[in-house]
Length: 394
Image (cartoon, rainbow, N blue to C red; front, side, top):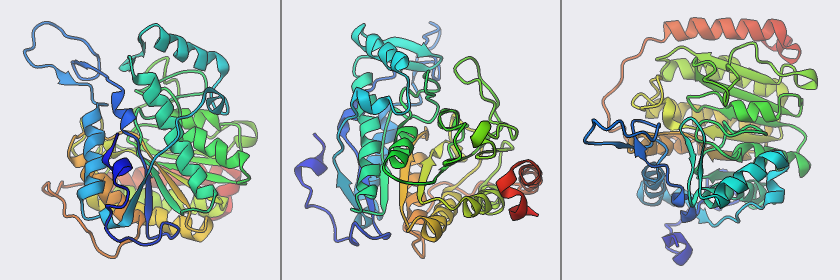
């Protein structure tokens, strides 16, 4: 049992949890019981000629550091900790199909299974996945009940690649997607999902691809499809279908896009679309694998960039959602820098006037002109083809 369960009063004085100057973190140690193994990168394979095998990128250590920096770092006075309730099977069926969930339950009963490339369901994984989904639902419910405006679901395994019918990219259950559907079922009219993980949030996009009630926006490196588990390319022409046409906006960024490029994309593409959509709930999907030093990404965000993105999200939520933001954790695989970048992101979401924590890694030089040209092309393409954006960008 985690220490915040035992000593909930041992927090420094903080702003009221019902205000936008406070973050309610939902977490449970049971999510550490998902074991992903060792091997070459994320393959789980021992080739037989290496003395040192590395942990799978999505390992418990990365999350332990995120938990500890929020408990003991300078942001701790702004945070309170909450225990979630695990999701039930019936909870999962709002986003996933019965057949898919049955297959995961069977894999768990059979002692585990490699679901797809790099994605291993081992003993303990299914309970951790149910906790992750339940943690995100608990955080969304806390907001909808009016108990707090900003909640952060600190979860693993991650979820944004999990589609209604299949696992993908370390993800079994779509934590953010389940929370979005819960918000809609609870009376929210329009939900905006902003995903800054370095990979396309393809599972969330797929779940709402035919809905005009959910605006899914994903900023990601231009990686394309990576196989049967990830058929979506994340390209600029994946706009949605039917009533959902125009409500899935992809911003595939050139490899090496850094702080200035991401801020430009948020200002020129994301903010105008969210403003036009006018959501009543904001879901901010964060992955620190877009940092300059992440083993899974090719982008160059530093703490400053994450802080800027967080501030833009704060302003959008204030203008449209009465300050309500659900933050959902996804990737971020550099064991230490991911935690620092999370800290910076939350500083931005709180709209703090100055950084609480300095960047421990030297400045990473960036060339933003290439990214700006790509973003202008994306912006022009959206303005031409997406009905609800035409008058925004003209």
